[in-house]
Amino acid sequence: MKRSSDFNELATRSGEWMRGTGPESDIVVSSRIRLARNLADFPFIKRCSDEDRVSIERTVRAKMEQFANWDEVHYYDLEQLPEIDRQFLVERQLVSREIAEADGARGVAVSADEHFSVMVNEEDHLRIQVMHSGLDLKTAWNQINELDDLLESAILYAFNSEFGYLTSCPTNVGTGLRVSVMLHLPALVITRQIEKVFRSMQRINVTVRGLYGEGSQYSGDFYQVSNQITLGRSETELVELVGGDVVPRIIEYERKARDYLVKEGQQDLHDDVSRALGILGTAKKISSEETMHYLSKVRLGVNLGLIDDLAVGTINKLFMQTQPAHLQKLHGRLLRSSERNVERATYLQRHLSDAFES
Amino acid sequence: MKCQYCEKPATFHITEITESTGSQVMHLCEEHAKGFLQKEEADPVASIASALAKQLDLGQTKKELEELDRKACPVCGISFFEFRNTGRLGCPFDYTHFAADLLPLMTNIHDSIQHVGKRPKKTAAADSQAVIIQLRREMEEAVEREDYERASEIRDELRRMEQAEEGMGDS
Image 1 (cartoon, rainbow over the protein chains, first blue to last red):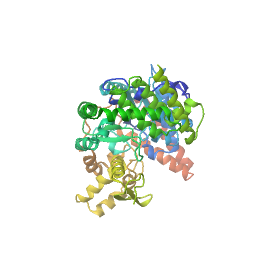
Image 2 (image 1 turned 135 degrees about the horizontal axis):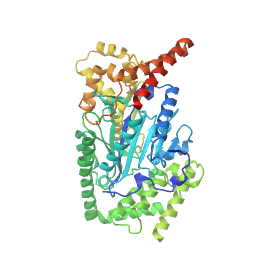
Image 3 (image 1 turned 90 degrees about the vertical axis):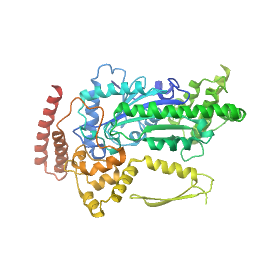
Image 4 (image 1 turned 180 degrees about the horizontal axis):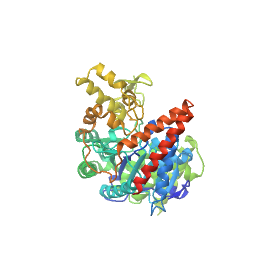
C-alpha cells in the first residue's frame, strides 16, 4: 500500500460506479456492498478520544501496509487532505460524505481499479466497500468477503455470537452488511409509476432513496435500493433479497415503461430528449442539478436508440466530471459556484460537440 | 401559502421537534413533504426513536423508561439516555450490558434478535477487550484530575494486556 494525495490521474477516468458496463447497465448503474466492522478493544467512534482515533488509524494503516499484493492500493490521509480532494473522493463514491466532513484522524485505502475502498474511522472503525458497474452483486460479495477475511486475519473484530458484528448504530448490527444498487429509472418517473412501485417495496424490508436533486426542481432519476435489516439473515440471503428478488422486478417495470414510452409517446419522448441535448450543448452557464436532470434524459435517449452519435460511456463520464470537485480538478484551480456554472457549460459544449463530430 | 422549496401551494405543515433546535414548522407541497418524510424514515436516530416509542406503547411505563435512561455502561460510561438521543452506542460491551434493553429494539428494527451468517475465525474473550477499553478511559480520567501516579499504573497494566493480546493474535 502506498500513501498518496495526487488525484490528477484519477480525475481523467470515469470511476467504477459510472463506467456504464456490466449486466443490465442500461438501467443498473452500480452494485455496491459495504461491511461495518469495529475493533474489539476500542470504544465506538462517538465515544473515542482524539488519541483513540489516532491509535485506531495508525494500527489499521500499519496492518494494511503489510498486506501482500496491496502494492497498488493507495492510502489517503483524510485529515491532511484539502476539502476539494475529499469532495472529489465523495463524488467518486469512494468515501462517504460523513467521513469527508468529519474531524480527526481518519483515512481511506482505495484499490487502483476503484473496485474497493476501506474507510478508517467513519461511523464505525472500518467501513469496507466493494463496487461494480452494472448488476453484479455476486462478484461484489465474493470480493468483499475475501477482503473482510484478509482484514480479520490482522484485526480483532468486535463480535458476539448473539448480535453478530457489533456496530456503533444498532441498525447495522449482525452482518453489518448493506447492499445498495443504484438504478436509473427515468421511464418510471415520466409515466408517474415510481411511487407505486416503491410503495409495493416497503413491505419487504428494502429502502429506496432518490439520489440528487432532492428538494430541488430537478431530478436525476437515480434511485438507490438497499436492504433495511442486517440482523437475522445471512449475507447471501440479503444479497439475494436485493439482487435476485427486488432489483430484477424494478428492472422489469422500468423496461415495460420504456417500451410503453417508445410505442405510445415516441414523438414526445424524442422531443424531450433532443431538447435536453440541445440545452446541454448550447447553454452558457448551467448548475450541476440541471446538468444531472438533462443528462438523465439524454442517457435514456441513448439507451432507447433515439440518439445515435453518443456513447453511454460518454454520458456516464459527463455525469462524473461535471460534479463540482471534478470540474475544479480538471480546470486546475478552485472556482466559485457562478464560475463553475460557466466552466461546466463550456465543458459540456466541448465534449458534446466532440461526440457529434466523431 | 407556498411550499418552502418550490412554487406549488403548501398542503403539508409539518412540525418537527428535535432536542437541538426545539420545534420547527415546515410548509411543504405534497411532493416535497413526501421527500422529507421519506428521508426521516431512513435516519437511524429517527428509526430508533420510533422503535423506542413503540416500546412505550407496549406496556413499559414512563417510570421504567426513566430508570432505563439512567443506566450506564461500566466500560465506556454511556447512559441509555445518551444512546437514545444519538442513536449511537458507546462501545462493544454495550451490547452485553444493555442486552435485555436492546432486545425489543432489535425486534422492531430487524424483526430478529439472533445473528445468522458469517463469523470471524478468531474471537477474543469479550471480557478482556472490555477491560482494555475501561482501563484506557480510567487512565484518561486520571490524567484529567492530574493523578499521574495512577495514570502510569494503568498504562503499565494496559501494556501488559495489549502485549498478551498481540501474543495470542500471532499464535
